[in-house]
Length: 185
Image 1 (cartoon, helix red, strand yellow):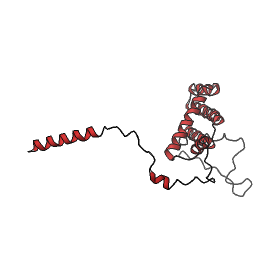
Image 2: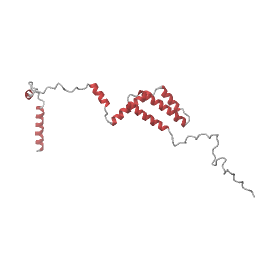
Image 3: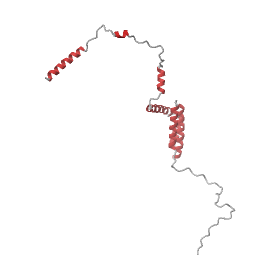
Image 4: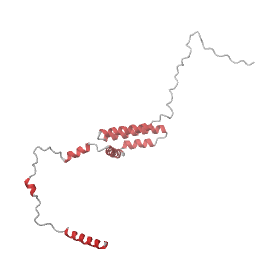
């Protein structure tokens, strides 16, 4: 019984598929008669001016596409600036000088000079105020890494040649008396 119903379904499906491939009539009227009775309304002459494609591109470049997209755009611009500045002779010389330092203190000072030169060059090439502000932040971060506040404090100033004031002013009725020496009995 199932076999017969399956066979009938297959024949009916084949018949439907052959009818689906018939060609359209050669005299097909593409315009419906209902459209001729109600013609489309004319476009009003005072329609708003649409901006040109280049104006739309500029508008979309200026608007924010989201926090992640803005961060990505900023990162791409920062990498372009890094690539442009990387081969600058002053930057290369400052980096080599920092690498050739003999002591840690000397290296931190030379790295500070390097970062100042590096970020000056990048800011000169930066186009947007947002990028310049970001570069200021990066520069401050790099210079802050060079500071070592928990190492040894700076040396105190050298002692002066003037005598230190005594606890008892000179000419007072109480004069400093040396303690007696112990007797050896």
